[in-house]
Amino acid sequence: MEKELVIRKCKSCEAMVEVLEDCTCDDCGIKCCGEVMEKLVANSVDASAEKHVPTYEKVDDQIKVVVNHPMEEEHYIEWVELVTADRRCRKFFKPGETAEAMFNYTPGATIYAYCNQHGLWSAVVE
Image 1 (spheres, helix red, strand yellow):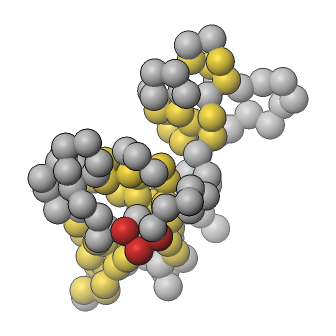
Image 2 (spheres, one colour; image 1 turned 180 degrees about the vertical axis):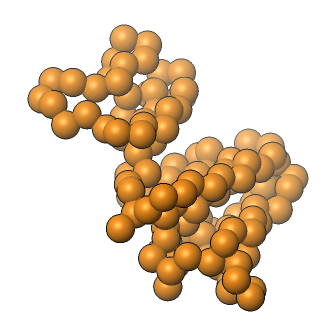
Image 3 (cartoon, helix red, strand yellow; image 1 turned 135 degrees about the vertical axis):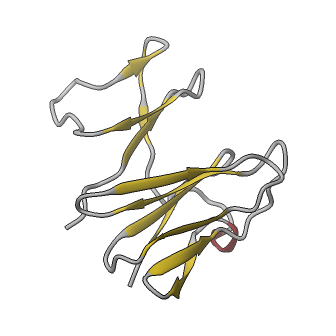
């Protein structure tokens, strides 16, 4: 079973952190700018799924991950990440690049994509 990818983001300065083990206490949380950071939930923003949800194609023992998204200066996919039970692999992008990455094929893994305007998106590898 894979571990959950937990990303928290500051509403004020937009700093992001990846949490290895999230806290489950009441009245607890990672703070930035004096406020508790918001936990990002994949596929929860009202935006075009076909431009945000990562897709993949199996190529031998790997997968080619593609996010069919504009890569403009103000609106682009910042990174994609493959999460398995024992591994996390992330690739970062810049505006103007193509949001594509190659990862090892791992059935049951989750692929995440982060859009700088519309947040976190995911798909499961079958």
